[in-house]
Length: 229
Ligand SMILES: [Zn+2]
Figure 1 (cartoon, protein in one colour):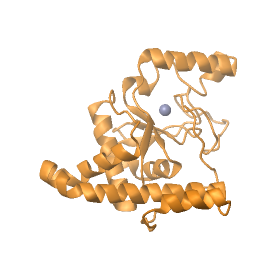
Figure 2 (tube, protein in one colour):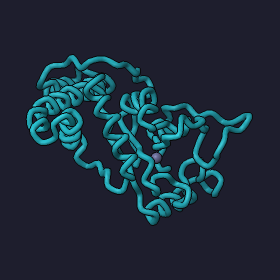
Figure 3 (cartoon, rainbow, N blue to C red):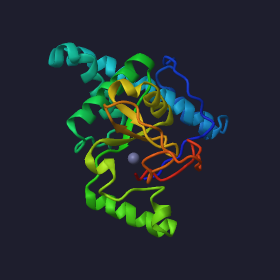
Figure 4 (cartoon, rainbow, N blue to C red):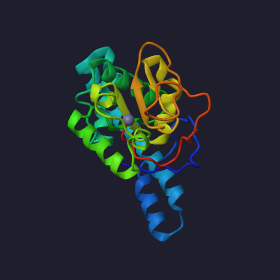
């Protein structure tokens, strides 16, 4: 799947400070033409953060009854299920899933940042289709490997990779994910993270290589690409 984030968005850690009902106000302002699309997007994201954090707080007492000391973690999980109802974490290895949930619980409670999963585990057949599409689109095997990997090499198939959104959440994960064993892997994919508890891996320019060439094409992190690796 493809999604677009504005490259001009700035990465800021700040506590959420918007009021309830902001979504309604944002939509009205957009409709009346008094707010730009970029401003509306930022305000909408801020409103989602606020709403998700509010939901997590509402869930906290029940989560405490159910999960005791893990209440914050469980409250976050329930709130995330409302914010990202379409995401699927099934198929990720237990360690990857635990690391992701621990990381995004901290992101939410500590900095009010949301981390949603757009793609987690993929069956080998699906990855094979993605790779075949990439070959068709890019025109050659070599070019396709810059965008997608065959099933035998994709960490999505292994259940240890996740593609995340929005870009602020990805930046949070890039900054703090190492303590959970989650790392960004490619310069040209800000959304793609892998669970590698052995230590921070070298940032590679793109999929299809296992080490940094001496001189390589460096992709801008906010380029709009298909997140298919
Ligand atoms: Zn990916």
